[in-house]
Amino acid sequence: MFMTFEKELIRKNYVTFPSPNNIFSYCNPIDKTSQINLSKENNLYKFSFPLGDIHYATYFKDKHELKKYMNFILVSKL
Image 1 (tube, rainbow, N blue to C red):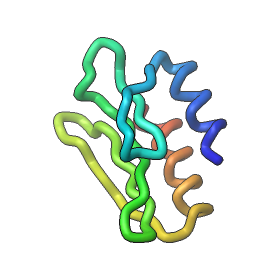
Image 2 (image 1 turned 180 degrees about the vertical axis):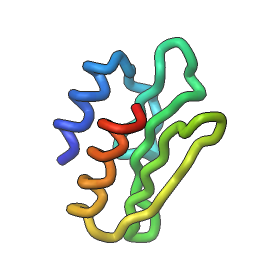
Image 3 (image 1 turned 90 degrees about the vertical axis):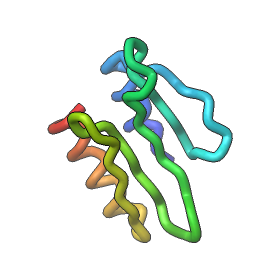
Image 4 (image 1 turned 45 degrees about the vertical axis):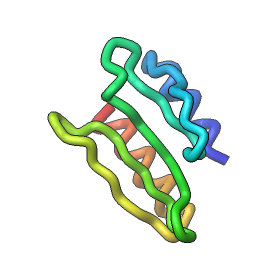
């Protein structure tokens, strides 16, 4: 479902971070607090990622819109 995104994170040297409640979770190998997470809560997708000194999260109903946003973040912020 999100395999292309995950492959790109690995290419950018992110590593998987065990988190049983998430669809996926990756972190920077040097800074484990710099995490990228995707989970599903109450029929909404929650996508969170590091943004400067904060960890930003946003919610989506539509999977297509989520994927567009995730790719934008992947290219422009990570």
